[in-house]
Length: 294
Image 1: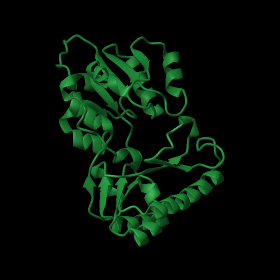
Image 2: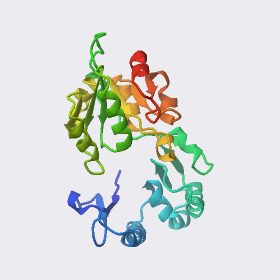
Image 3: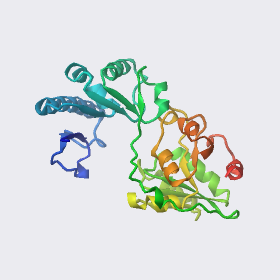
Image 4: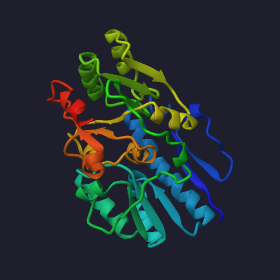
């Protein structure tokens, strides 16, 4: 099957390939991270224009639109030129609280051949429609690489944050609890997404049971999960962005047979059921309950 991938080249420092099937839609001016709001707004409008022109020029038979925001930007074009010939893939909560945005989203979703969502919880904020739950993990993951689970009664429980490190408030709250409880180890695998707040806090705490492990490659994943007892996915439940999402850690936990640490009242807690412990980091004062559960 022949295909092209149209992508918004917002970070030129990544030096993404420009050769087909990859077609870059340029960002004008400074990179997206450094751009002021007016420049970002202008670039999104230009992105929509360039995407329409490229699609019309190449006369594609079918479109897969990733994710909600590009679909909304192209809503008029998609419903007029490609009715029933596009799929919208929804990975996160975006701006559904904003009335005009929600109405445009309703329109573009109604005209789609298929609407894929990564979490069943998304139906709580999306327009009424028929949705297919489909996440982005692949079955090529080596399930056989999962080591046999063994844990002696007196060993420390290793909690691991695996992936791009954010949710700094929740990270620091758990660090404080682990610092006071020598039954636990807390490790961070990956780079920080928003600066160095977590790593600086770890340095100030200076506890050998709280460790920054650095970046990792996909091939390291089996070993990382093998060295972990609990997978950190405790991001709070204050906003729809975290309340209704199902992260990759849900599937990785199933593949590598590791339980999850989640926030109460979230889709992650509901879907993982007995294979997760719901920890309210905003109120809990010790990890005794987690220890007893584990």
